[in-house]
Length: 445
Ligand SMILES: Cc1cc2nc3c(=O)[nH]c(=O)nc-3n(C[C@H](O)[C@H](O)[C@H](O)COP(=O)(O)OP(=O)(O)OC[C@H]3O[C@@H](n4cnc5c(N)ncnc54)[C@H](O)[C@@H]3O)c2cc1C
Image (cartoon, rainbow, N blue to C red):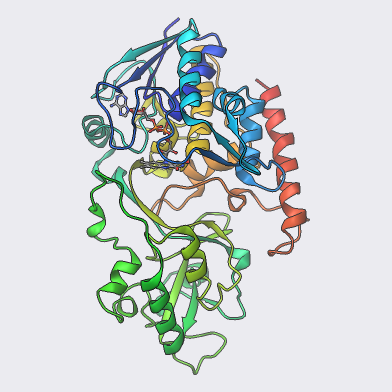
């Protein structure tokens, strides 16, 4: 049988290899480390965790990432089984002994007769065979060049510039209002495409002071500050002058406060719809290097966002990722070259768990193809299905930035109560539905 080739033995590539071998299909796993390293990886081990040692919340009832853990365990995932064996005490989080974890993943892959690990960098996208590209946020330059040659130069980003994303139901619409600047747009929906949060002069000044005082993260060594072209962090804009933001992303022009039409706002923060479901909104132009705790405090100073709950916070990182909504089909294949699947962080998910989950899916899909079958993705009501649905179609392609799993990606349940207070009922209903639908997907294979 023709083997499946995987480029990259990170979190995604390792999980994909495991899933393919479990299906009885041979795998060739290409990994460039240790001969060629990255600025973040320190070892030659598979599935190295480059920064924190946490797989985040393990609560599979109230937390979307915990639900993703549950699904990966149910699918016999290597990453979760190994994490469980090397777990460290960390409250409700799944933290691991990182060295023992990666060593054990490496050993498991090497011990599997159907897996061959081949050292060395792959520099060109292959034009035939059954391949999975799982080269992660630090894809080597030569391969990145080749990917851009096939997909177009705009389709593979080298940095993410993530503006914070808010759960729409937690925005106070008695303060904020829907309107596009100068009421632009052909349809009523387009004319109301943004949510606007007004600020008085005092509120603006207090906000700028908080922004300047907030704790920031530094770039990692070797992570050049390539953000200077076009996506400056808001705090850097504020450092350039107190009024800079008011003439940039917070300009108040072309907008009329629907609640107080006679009051002219001194500044306006705009939020733009981030997914087709309309459950998530990103704060326009608010990419930032503020630390997470500081972000929550500072952004809740924005009128209308006092009780905001964040689906993800902002950031700017070195990160190679595809514009997946335009490039990948729902089987994770590159539309232009269906012999290539992409998996992991390079598809525009963010985080160890999400990357490994996309490896699990790509692995199962590639194995099915090798066996002459077709495997559809799990339903979008599951954590894995919600993620793949987001990156391959649900997300806005124009503003696509990497995404963590969160309940904002799940189709709403009609009968569940909305708002922050409804979460106690809503989240268990989401995770129960996800477990039922994921089990059905597994049973159908
Ligand atoms: C500095 C930094 C800090 C991070 N911190 C965190 C964190 O704390 N928590 C978190 O959840 N996520 C974090 N991330 C994101 C993290 O990298 C991903 O969540 C996860 O590692 C992605 O898994 P992956 O398999 O897609 O990529 P990786 O785990 O990076 O695996 C990709 C593999 O491909 C190999 N490779 C690349 N190019 C080639 C090539 N041409 N040929 C052969 N092999 C190749 C690489 O050597 C690597 O082993 C961080 C990322 C960076 C860059």
